Each structure stands twice: as structure tokens, then as C-alpha cells.
Image (cartoon, rainbow over all chains, first blue to last red; front, side, top):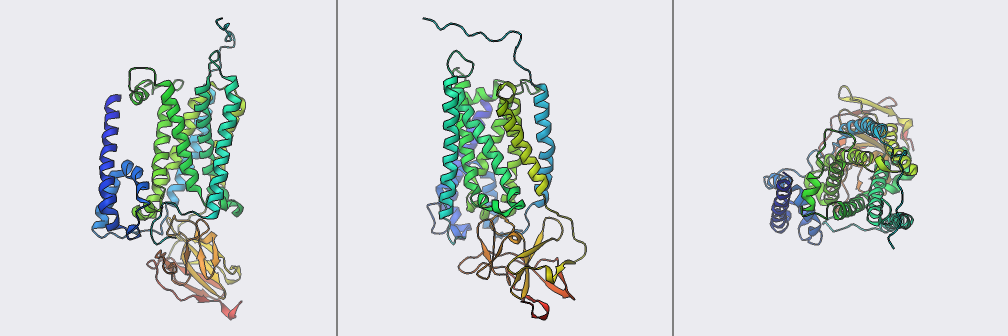
Length: 119
Length: 344
């Protein structure tokens, strides 16, 4: 199971590297006006494309079909942020409290004894 | 604001910010190792390798804690705004420090067996059904994976490519990463630490993050109808804005520019920064986060920049300023509303 997961992760990354090469050479200049003639920043995008290449392919296709780049740009996810902050306010104290209550102190009745260093 | 993408948009303030940040991180790790290493030798349960991984791990945790405090602190007191200007570099450095911690862990706990280190990490402990002895390493892996995604998508390209709302939602994963990091520390290092100061710092820092977010949360009640009351004309300060929730996730910022009022979306087109907390500089609404600018009368960035934000229609009812909550398309020109009696 573990070996399979590691193999899948390597495969995912390898495909992502291929997508990064294609997108940065052929795609980014076609769909992003601010990227035309700009090359130095492109290597910085490689890790992100490797991690999110399915999203990159989806967005690349959408932009090729003419989707607007600034779609809904004035609607930040304020409610989602408030919900996540509220969830954090519950989860963090809960996790810390449970972990500290369950914590087992060391064997005070049989403390560790330092052995003599071999001569 | 940039016409073409560049690797990093350096400014003098960013150089200073990054220099201070690097100095603090290097200082923390050096002091941690300097103090910890003499206490660590092969006759003790904690040796030098573990001291180093704890130095980087605790550093990453406290950096993440600090990062999550910056937003609410800046909202509560504008003197904290400079901390926010270069928060992305802070985040990238946090991911790097956390990755160093992970590599030390892999190179020590999982390096001395024939099993591949990554495979061993995933299979060495699968006791997900118990609290004490829970595979807290998986929680750290989750947090690190999220930090890696956020760091890798921190360039402005990703904002433009994914659109700001999608990018913002992706980066809200920082809360998931923090919850995972807290659980990673609570079920890991806190279980065997004998240093009460470390425990107090972890618990205090995490509760500070939670408390600041609760204190600084903004109002977001939904507006009813298409026209809402903003404020009386006397309430407006020249060059500043009054922000009003207009339903759902949207807010409008009504700016007074001399003797007239203009209303725009409160969300900057760059990173959805709170424009209403900025001010008018050189005739343009200036975002407090990264200095992106927009003309009040049409929500467009001055040439050669191309950013646009929605505008709103205003009208006066006596001394009351009313706003039509139906947003105009980004960049739509709206004649500024003159203040009555030619108020200065």
C-alpha cells in the first residue's frame, strides 16, 4: 500500500513536469497577456504546476475557450473564511485540551539512569 | 502592479522585510541548536539530529502562528499593516523551514532500514484508531503538503490565472494546515516534552490565533432590497472610505474624494485586499495591502495598468447617502456624487 502510494506520487509529479513544460513553452503566452514576452518568472511556476496540473489543464482549456480572467474578481470568500475561523476556534482548543489530558508523564517511579561511558 | 510578470516584485520595503525575517529565523534556529546541542549527546534520549529537527519544526510552527496573527492584527490596528505587505515571502520561507524539518525527520527516523524512507513514513505507524500513539507524522505531512501548494502558488501569475476568488479559496487551506500542525505538535512533541515553556508557547500561540480571529471578524449581514443606507454625509472623511456589507460575500467601499463621493467594490482585484481600509493617494484609491490603485470614478487602474473593479451607484436622500447594491460591471464609469452645499 505504502509503496503504491509513493509510486503514484512519483507518477503524478512526472506527469506534472510534462504539463509544466508544455504549458510554459506553448500555453502561458497564449492565455495570459501579462506573460507574453516575460520568461524569467516562468521557472517559478514549475512546482505549482507539478502540484496542481489537473487544475492547470482545466483552467488552460477554459481560457483557450475564451473565459474571462477577471471573473467574479470582486467576490472574496468572506463567508468561507469566517466559517473556517469558527471551525478553527473549536478544533484548536479541543485538540490541545484532549492531547494534554491524555498526555502520559514519564515513569517517575523509575527514572532513567545514566550509564557509565565505556572506557 | 505590473504590466508583465516578473520573478519577484522587489521594493526597498520588501528587502528590509525579508532581511529582518531571515535574521529572525536564522537567530531562532542558531540559538535553539546552540542551547540544545550541549544538552544532547548519545547518553541522552535527545541527540543532535533531533535537536535540529525540533529547531526547524518549532520554528515553522511559530512562523505559521505569527502569519495567521498578521491578518486580524492589521484589521484591529493599522500599525500592523507593514507586516502584511510581504506576507507571501513569509509564507514561502515557512514552507521551506517546514520542509527542512521534514527532511531531518526522514533522514533520521526512516533512514536506517531497507525500506524506502517515504514508504516507511506512510507505513511505520498506522494506529489511526488510538489517540496516544496516533501517527501524528501524517498530520505533519498534511500540513507540509498544504504549505507547499500555497508557497508554489504564491506568484501573482496564479492570482490572475486562477482568478482571485479561486486563489483566495485555495489559500484558505492555510487554516486546515494550521489545524493539522497544531494536532501534529499536540500529539507529537507535546506528548514527551519536559519543557513547560515550549508547551506554554505552543498552547498560547494557538489560542492567540483563535482569539484574534474571533475578535477581528467583520460583520457580513445580508442587505435587503437593492438600496441601502451607508451613512450621513457628515460621517465621511476626505480621502477615506466607509465600508458597507451588501449581502453575501460582497462589500462596497464609499470614498469621499474632496467634495464628492464614489463607491467601488471593497475587494482589490489583486489579492482581494480591503480597499475600504486604504485611502486616496494622488487621486486614486490605494489598496492598503500592496498599493494597487484605482480611479474612484470608474474603478480602473491608471494606464498602463489594466486592473478593474466594480463600481456602484449612489444617491442622496437629504443628508443620507444611499447605495444601490447592484454592482456595475468592473470598470464602469459612474459620475461622483457631489456633497450637498458644496461641502469642503
